Image (cartoon, rainbow, N blue to C red; front, side, top):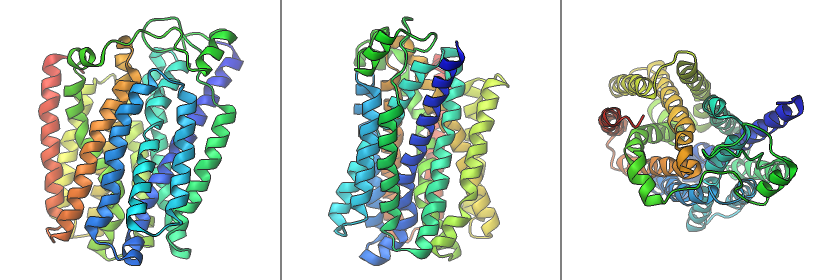
Length: 420
């Protein structure tokens, strides 16, 4: 591969990385703003939980739909739509004050954000050879951490000086600008004639690249039927392994500032700034899992067993030590999030590429994400209800334990069936 081609590869990686990081900026802002919104709009915990619940529910359904479309459509322009409309939804969210309109806007935001990951994964498959894709996707997963950090730090600072609406207006403007840059610079990528659904082994001709830009699927493996794929690939059982990481990872992000504010009585800005340590730990979690997979040669099964076992211990520490000390509570919360982010990068970043031979890379990614976020939506709503019923955070942590035990059982079954 020539130096020019390598530069094009790197350009697309950077564009994908920045775009996905900014999408998190337009999602994590709610975590910081929700306490201020609750006071300003006189909303209950259940009503506030409704935003995240609807977002993740719509996001999950969108993952399934857009994952299917991503195997057939023009990935560049699907990502453009996601960036642009998510930005507009954030801008409008900062302008209106009616609860039901806000709820609809946040649900719409969730649907168009769901366009991003499965289409980015397909583009990365277009630019890199199969042996590199697993590592590249794990590296790309660090964009989630950057976006979380940007959302917590940027919106935390905005919360200290400006009304909560600016925590949506500014991220929205950034996403609209990002969409314009993406439209001008992004390419679907060269198409590989190999029949495994992945491309990138060699740069195609200019005519083939133009075909890809227009949404043509030159050189892709023919996609088998959805029903046959689900029952022959083991994807359904693998999905059960993915549920806890979605529940814990996203509920820590969504409810973390509220949790710290309720238990330790910090204000919203202080809670957001204190939790900035969590994205740093998440970044380290992704890197550690990536190196264990690449350099250590450990299997997905072994890494998942380790992460789930460590998660159980950390949740037990939260149950018995969260209220004892902020150092113990926030430290255990950060480590738990890091472990789940590492597993997320492994399961939702690298595993879908294993289904390239079926011609269902984008759909597999969307399917795994879909049910991960359905679980997240359910638990976000459940969290709000449990808090309104004064049950306390310890009971919420116990529900996390139950889901992780389910994941371990599914993981054992996957090992017997050799799906992972």
